[in-house]
Image (cartoon, rainbow, N blue to C red; front, side):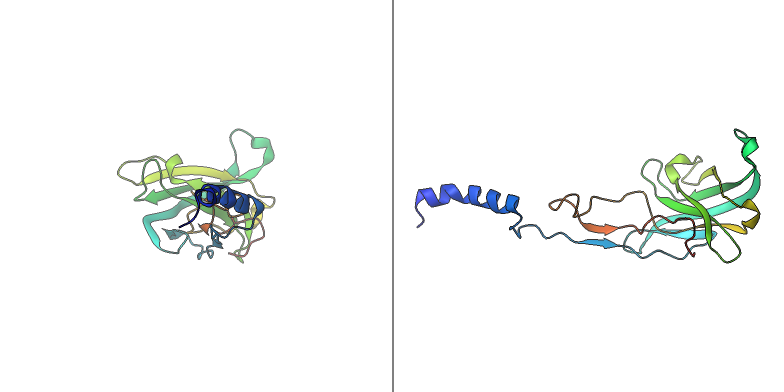
Length: 175
């Protein structure tokens, strides 16, 4: 049997080890999901690459001046739809205007919770400002759900870690 003093000091020793960085009590690992194949219609997938039961689609797009800033010239006005999305905690996907070689000219994330419609079919529209609108050949969605990206190991070794979505798409990315 251990003396009472040793048992009483054990929690303090664990705290000291944890604060000093010498503890291996928490094993924290971050993983980043692979970026899925972009398309006009995609099955939204979680960070493990599994479908979440929601489809996202670019309904249409056109170049036109934004009504609030017409002096800035043409921008990409696009409509999108989520099929099967939850009203409050549905997914989010990146949408990008691309040139003829599928190089991103501008991107943003759209959230199914920002779209409207009955029975899980949620429609919305948004704008993308691109430097050279005349180069836009299409608008594509990336299937990776961007709605939740938990804390990383660097931010919180105890509660962080796990799978994370890929980095959001940016101008110049090959899709």
